[in-house]
Length: 246
Image (cartoon, rainbow, N blue to C red; front, side, top):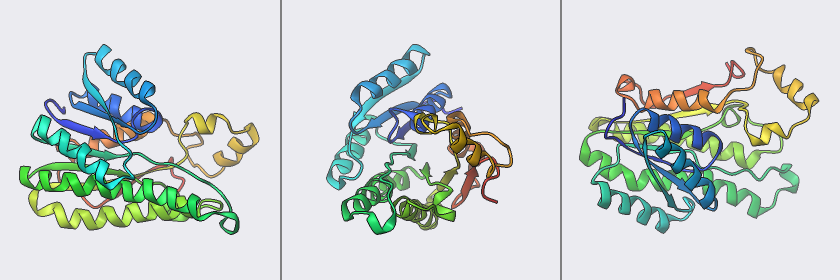
């Protein structure tokens, strides 16, 4: 259980982030639901958690903004005197073929997915080292391992997240802080719902378990990694992909 733990989940207003926020709250954590532009959606997540008897609040912050992240984490530490769990889930896509990709499309994805994760880890790490305990989970992707046509920016960002996770794990381990990454495969979200049946069938051919993943599959993996049961796991990349990449 995560009773009395303070957990920050970035990009938690929908999809995988929402599922993680709900799961951590159900296990007793006080969850800070971070969002950038979807205030109404974030407030809905908070209300859902509270209706189930949990504790949550929302906080707007663009994780790509270094100074905004400094204030975000600083405000939470001032209020709660600790941060036990950080889940870096915020991410965007700007897909395009490499020869057509603009500098803005490349930079936007790197700034949110990679630098955003660095920003929050950078500001939470000092507090976790002081506490001599903490759990950080970064959201990677199978695309960061095997690549994907039309996603050189996204693949680069997620490969960077994996490398950053391993480096941070080595820096923070001596004080009892673990840093791991989760690499989802094809997960059933609003995006995959819009795909044609033929596109879904083609995807299924790549997945030995022959189904799309659920957001709950990711959330339960994250909940394990931030629990006491995972205290001897750090610097790892956990694939939750139905066997897609092995």
